[in-house]
Amino acid sequence: MRDLHRIERETFLRRVEWHDEFDSTNSRAMALANEDGIKVPLLIGATRQTAGRGRGQNSWWSADGALTFSVLINPVEFNISPQHLPQVALITGLAIAETLEALLPMPVQLKWPNDVYVEGRKICGILTEAPAGRPNRLVVGIGLNVGNSMQEAPPDIRQSAISLVDVLGEAMPTRDDVLVSLLKHWEQWLRRLGCDDLDFPNVWQPRCYLHGERVSVTIGPEIHTGVCLGLDTDGVLLLHTETGVRRILAGTVRRL
Ligand code: BTN
Image 1 (cartoon, rainbow, N blue to C red):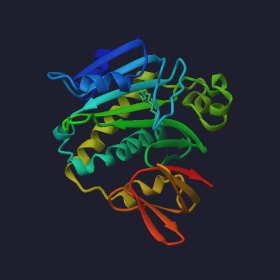
Image 2 (image 1 turned 60 degrees about the vertical axis):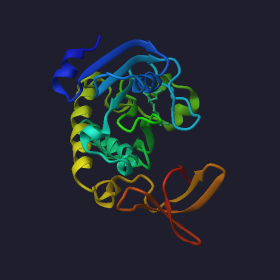
Image 3 (image 1 turned 30 degrees about the horizontal axis):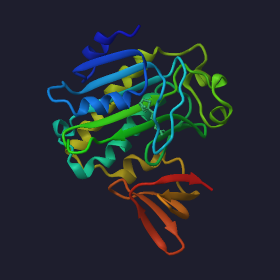
Image 4 (image 1 turned 180 degrees about the vertical axis):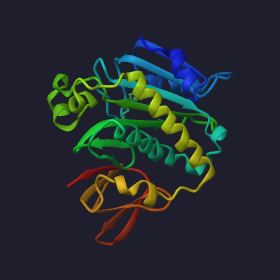
């Protein structure tokens, strides 16, 4: 059982709701985003998700021991303007990287726009969703592999993902410790995003997993190939293609 009061006491959240089992915490947070009078920031967590969602049409696999939760925030409370909303995923990745780096002996890297990698394997995915017609609501969903060993995962995931327990073995922090630390780092980054124009080449790029690599970027029906040049000042991906440097606002990046 989680210590929900501790999480409320030690972090910037106003309310924490935890379920033993839920279909998708992002779906729950999106539904609540449309209700009036909900206290935010609100965290919705689940020990088990039966229909966890990833980006696009992907599903999100997790097993017992994973940390799966969504936070409903009001970006206006953090002074985050609508044009900065796409950057929330980027700073969330930074907060997760800092949290994990305090625990792990190796660097933590970021794959644009919102995956976190350790040793070439994905350890965490982030799914941000903005409910239509509600400019003062944003849902940020985080799936972090903590105590769910990849030995229990389906074969394709076992090859491409990693978990904290796979690296740390018995020397594991509790999920609550990881969650509290992550939320503290994240609050700082949200406040920084609200008051500065963050210089993404400076703050994000040193962690860029695919910098200098040949990649493909899928944007709907289009596929662009080129070399990943890292980020522009506003967090947009720069791709060096045969026809010049292209700014990529959204898309799925794969190493070639
Ligand atoms: C991705 O890498 O495609 C994003 C994965 C996001 C998964 C998390 S788990 C908690 C929250 N609830 C969901 O249904 N999805 C997000």
